[in-house]
Image (cartoon, rainbow, N blue to C red; front, side, top):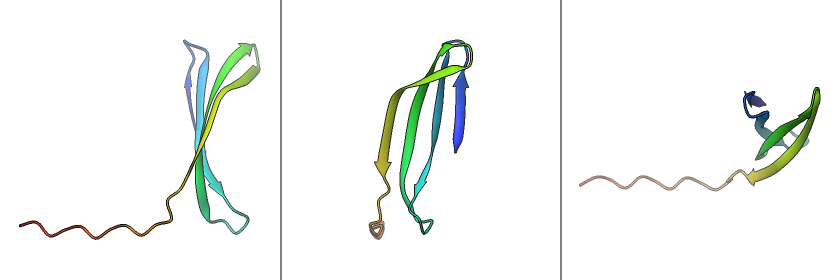
Length: 63
């Protein structure tokens, strides 16, 4: 997990992997937190995105 903070605005960003019980990466999450009172953080935005399990296409040959 990664945590980035912006103390001036009282905001923080957390992001990281989501894994299934076997440890396979299945998604990533991003959350924005707001400091509401000393020591009290609240999530104001929470979004996840599935990880593409598709095969990457072959790169075409350049002419």
